[in-house]
Amino acid sequence: MTVAQPQPPAPQRPQPDPQPDYVAKRKEKSKFERFMAKAPVHIAVVAIAILWTLPTLGLLISSFRPADDLVNSGWWTVFLNPFEFTQFTLENYSTVLFDQGMGQAFLNSLVISVPATVIPIAIATFAAYALAWMEFPGRQAIFIVTVALLVVPLQMTLIPILRAYTALGISGTFLAVWLAHSAYGLPLGVYLLRNYIGSLPRDLIEAAAVDGASHLKTFTRVIVPLSMPAIASFAVFQFLWVWNDLLVALVYLGGNQDVAPVTLVLRNIVGDRGQDWYLLTAGAFISMLVPMAVFFALQRFFVRGLLAGSVKG
Image: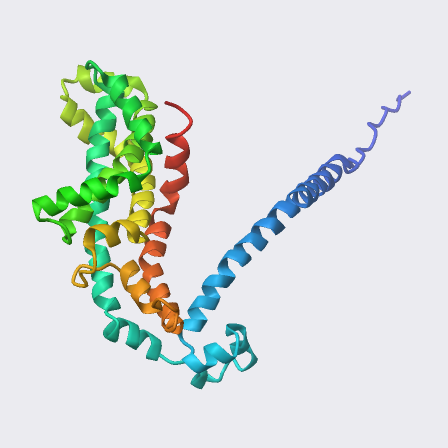
């Protein structure tokens, strides 16, 4: 008698696990919740950006409008007829560049700002390395005095330095403002760069010394490449300050129009009673071009170098 063999149970189709759908929905919900939590911050940032951009946009539009239109209507009225190109003119720029001397002043500002930025960077970087990694008597005292100079108003130095420049015969020359801006910018440069260079790993300096590198080679091959964020942040500070300076240029250059920067020419354009203020829009926008280009070119180093040079000393 043959006994029937039991048949194996038919395989059942696995039921879909609801867990992946739940996890996906949960992730989407968490993303939405995080977005909503950050929405006020995003809205505030966008609002601040718009508020900061509107004056620049208004200045740009006003610089292309005729003088009569500037007096009789606001800059936003150009959007009522956006394709009416007759409401724009290049006369303001032509007058400012060629009749008011803004073209020569633009070159003068470059001649003043570039050396007045490079000189303090070079000196401050050497000094910062010495104060951070070289042992010599009075190192801390020198650093304390340098930091203390940050709180000394530069107005206290104007008359003594001007008398010294007059005695040396360099008053009213580019050399006068180069030396002045370099001296005024050195305390901040030494402070920022010393803190940044001092925060670099000691192992790098010791490894270079073990390999037989001198202080100069360690400085050029190790310190300078690693310190570019701090150097760039100080370069932005120094260049913008020198480019936008009026007081130092007015005192040390006087009324010499051959070496006058854009700030002095802008002051002359607006006049004592503001009678030529419509030309100020074109002149002001020309003076903004280089600082904006410098800032956007170095912005990726700016915040990183500034924070790294201020949190550890």
